[in-house]
Length: 197
Image: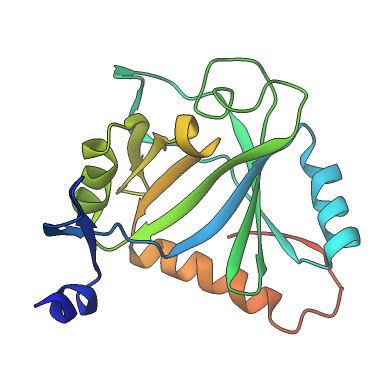
């Protein structure tokens, strides 16, 4: 029985006496992206490439969301720029919001500063994954539809110091992520900044 629980990805916990054991499902831990908020996208991309050799960066169009909600209320997200690159198995995202409008980005990194913002879970079971964090007491700060698919940011900063993004796995993102992976595979340093789409 214990072996079956462990094989299924469950964790075993004991009560205060150390006697009873209950299976608790673990969350999906396959994070695929690390994101920093930066004050200048061009400077940040150049710094990453020069310092770490990561590239090329794919500059994305400003993303729009359908049905955006911020802290439980409908919102119009402020414009921002983003760039993505592949570093081994991990995708690197850089985000630049030019103003100080309250947002999921400004909740973590103040205007004019750089800082780690979130890690992303590319989810094949959105409700399950969001539900895990909500049951643990964390709140969804921003949610919406990106290219028709659900995405949200969960405020895990009290525990981790950064947020968790959960993005629904979908064919559009699959194609974008493959472009980024392919671009980074055996990259020779040429064309360090490219356009997506």
